[in-house]
Length: 383
Length: 147
Image 1 (tube, rainbow over the protein chains, first blue to last red):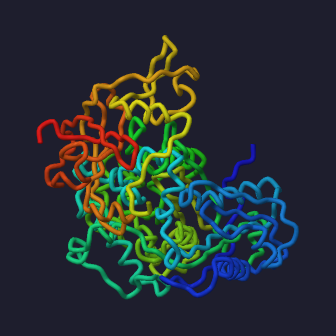
Image 2: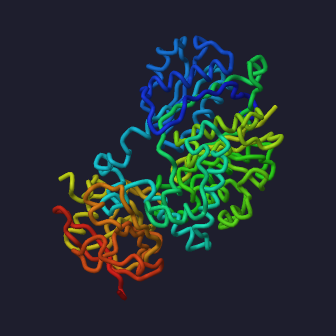
Image 3: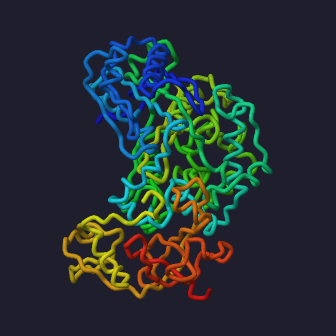
């Protein structure tokens, strides 16, 4: 059976500015990002026949296709579970292109999270769902839900706030190198981190991602077509989604083992279909809505053993020149929080050699989507 | 109403939990297949072990241990912000350690959500279920066995 391995490539990336507040609508921002990505690829909008997005996306393919002047669209897909779906958009398009359901696929994310309402303020509408078991008790926000896992993780494995600081610092240091990042030229110290206000103990302000307005997009075509595009292709080497047995999104406390989240399931599938192992990964873009997701993901994706994710962050391992540089654009913590789509585009930049925090000769990059919810991941490879 | 604590909105699967809670009983859904009998939470239509659609609600002792906890600070919904920083805890039941419930640790059933000093909260601490009426709905809360 023909697999997905290197059958398709990301050939265009585009983005708008990132800011706490942008004046334009989400739909306008989406169109700008998509047209920028197509221009980057050197592909006409009329050639787009595939779209993929993920839930909590307010712009839909009908409006976007009309606005940019797409032709007949033969594949469209919307992946569930918010930030867990980012990488799956590329995976769905890769599958569609590899099987002939589409020839030019566009994935995108447009979000006005900085100036828009906080999603947890819509708590009342969530109550008829399993949120009835958590929201009434004041577990209102994602930070509260992940904070619960973080506290348990710290208890079981001796992880400390210094480990979480290592994560926040690595992302901030990379953002300090990235003129597009919200936290460009805004260094952070350990003192700033330790003295910042609590959001949900044990998580402080700097353990949480930014609230950002902005949009991004990327373009996927077959590996064959990619050779004729304007940019060096970045191959989709392996892709996976993960919804573990008995998993419960965000509040996985009811699972037998709540600390082995969806990353573990996605990772098994990702590596099974790859020629690479975790040791071969040059750089990683790991979904960082909250700092504890990094040690949990490092374990899940096999960069270290169970319970070793916190210790892995020591000694500058996550910095440029370290064992596994992560989130080289600054990530959700310090570049922009656009539900992880910036991580995909940053992975492409690394493999093109154009990142503002370039890992020398990076040839492989892991990109992950939201851990803690049904998730997805991509293994990208340079030619 | 906007300034009230949230109350559970029940669905068909979960309704019995809240009906028993109104009687001061902590009950958990269990498979009623005599060859299975596995407990499950949150409630759902069928048993993930044997796929039986027959279920019963088994009474628990109400004893448990704190599995983890957080102390939320604002920004929060107004009624919660008014009691912040408060605690939210996950309790694993003594009768069924793999069944875990989200709740609040309080000094007595009707005490505020911030009535226990966060410094006194420990993972592993033994707790006991108590029942409080919130906005007309009875919800389980937890008190320390040894305050």
